Image (cartoon, rainbow, N blue to C red; front, top):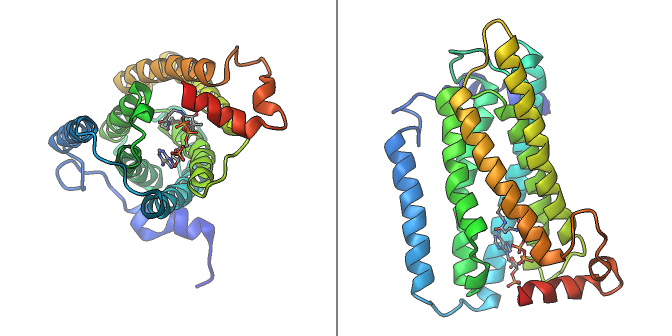
Length: 282
Ligand SMILES: CC(C)(COP(=O)(O)OP(=O)(O)OC[C@H]1O[C@@H](n2cnc3c(N)ncnc32)[C@H](O)[C@@H]1OP(=O)(O)O)[C@@H](O)C(=O)NCCC(=O)NCCSC(=O)CC(=O)O
């Protein structure tokens, strides 16, 4: 059989026949979700309050590099898989933003939503690596809040067949390709000059998501049947609004000034070193 991206990412029987069934699919019960999030928060709190000695960089850096390569490749696959499934598989292209009510969570789009959900649990390892490296000051509210809450958002997507998730999934997975390339470069001892660009792409994705959410609301109230997952929509709005505020704050603290202003120290000849120095001070 010749290699076909469409076959392996959309039309493979395991993907087409995927079905999220509560109590049967791994990780599909509210109990699993609750225990996962509570365990993440408890382990993070306990490990960070133990003040463990940092693991030696020559031991930890290769592990961090492998972790970032895995998430980089996974994010890329999810972005392409989610994009192809959105364009090729739904009965109607309109599904990218508005899924009809009572649609069962089955088929390629929901397969990628499920992989995305599991990948958010794998991202918990980011937190562990921060703790093991001894950089406790990098364990910010933004980081822990994001990692704990995003898993709940993904669960709601699957549980309610929530409209708009395909657009958000593809955007976030694409931004994460950039983010994990940045983290991989750091783990390899490089200090990319484009750290600020990563943050600005993250902020842009939240703003873009509000446009998508507004369009979905329009479809919901003007279409004949409405869109599924309107309560999940409310969760998404609150979560993304809070992330937007936190990321704008992160931007101001790390790069100074407004989003539009050019920070000479970031873009200058020695930009790389100055960005890192600023981080260490903040
Ligand atoms: C540029 C950012 C992507 C990252 O900002 P940071 O302040 O974390 O960046 P930094 O320069 O301190 O990171 C370099 C350090 O990270 C370490 N590092 C490497 N891989 C890592 C990983 N997978 N997770 C966490 N840290 C990691 C490197 O070894 C290096 O350590 P050392 O310096 O010791 O060598 C930013 O925009 C951002 O996201 N800030 C919020 C912080 C955060 O936790 N973000 C990720 C989840 S939020 C998210 O994911 C939103 C979204 O969905 O888009």
